[in-house]
Length: 435
Image 1: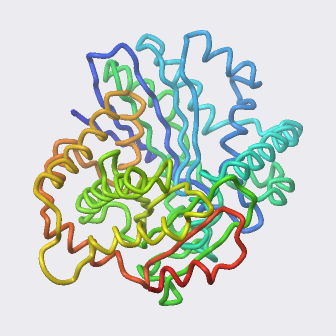
Image 2: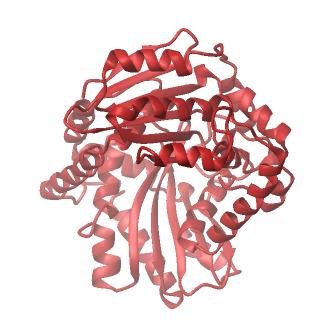
């Protein structure tokens, strides 16, 4: 892909990614501001702010006006908040690109943040928090990150706490907007069918405002801490329970790993794919197909700018939870033998590579996914890695790379287990990890 980068005079980075074979264009604004950036007394502010921009802006003063403008051209419009970023996008037909710039620039520059709308939206946010509390498949990963990042803002749930959301006021939003929503802390990405000169003109017209502010990263480091340890602070396996009456147990069993953009991320991806990347992966075959212990089981890699993890997620019957954990631990340990060659065939590695590449490439056939993928690279890594180079790096992973990463990751002092289910005795599960 031809990725054309321009930096406006105010510090805003613009990525233009032509995809001339499509009729749509996605315009994304990604801001380096997420739940990790919040103040302790306002957990959930970043996510709440994302909601509020849809309630009215300077040029589109009501939620109805925003929705009507987008609907009038059949646009796809959405936003999302993560722990280190918030993104806003519109996907439109190529002849409506100017409207996307209009709406998005108003989102990040001129939200009205009306007090009465804030109070009304609190009810929506509180309902969303309650909904996620009732979804153990969503709650379990949150509990896992609370365990990994206890005491740090990175461990806070993105939706926030009910008591904090209830007391958020307009001054909190204004402070957050002024501190983080500035040009040098954003990336504007356009992917699809467009005229480059028109895009440059639109970017200058709608986003060429404000002045650079380079203090955001320092403020983040002060608030959330950096250089997080690769091993558990206790030096031992750790368990966190979220006691709740459920129909089955939902577990996340993982190990601390490397940060975003680490050179080993390609070997980590292949290791993850071998373990639980599809319906023929080791964990799916052993846990679900052979033993019938789980309906869903998969591995995933979590990355932040200064740390990361490899985790196994599964939903299992209460009566089978110990057996399921034991089998998962056994499969993990097979990948981390300290002597001899790893028992992974060349065919298994080849399949894992093709799986990893296939999932990536298929996802990048959509203009919004392209805009988000490369926009996040620029925002959080400070550079763009071309798709061809990523695919080449994946192909270059060796069995020695996989074994080295597995041996580094899969050790007792990195093991962490989060469970959502009707349990109160963490020692019961800690004993399994310590064997």
